[in-house]
Length: 229
Image (tube, rainbow, N blue to C red; front, side, top):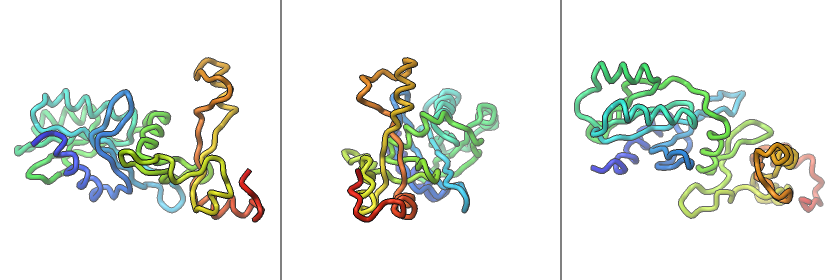
């Protein structure tokens, strides 16, 4: 069995075990790619907070400390990080001690089944990298309510922004979509400080508003004959 053949097994287990509302295999940024990524709601009734889970999958042939180090690197993206290793024998006491010392969770893959042996601590990832990873999965952060929502299609070749309009409020209301808009003030500041190089006519500072905020809040502030301009 190849390593990538284990991804769907781990993904299905993760979705059941952690009640993930979205997941994806082999995704990430230019710095590294995560074998399995899942998103789950943890905010309760008063918050839209979520947790990002990243799992490094191995087929049991790589040195344990090396594989553990790869899993630990995902903490810059995720709130919880795991190493899922395919093996018939349980993890040894030394391996569990290494994982505990590094701060990663352990999952045993045996006979196409997964068992969580060691839980992952909770990390606070780098916000900019976490949000970029979520955008790769077509998930955006709402600037109004603080919830996360689908902004498009996260399949190969899909439109990542299919479920948001480009600063067209009336169209978002009519089509029951969210809104994507651009923050020019932050863009100007970053350009002035040399953080982001643009020509002054372009900005990459994209922000999102979810469909619920559009339909249940913004729609009440927009005149019915508005054209969204």
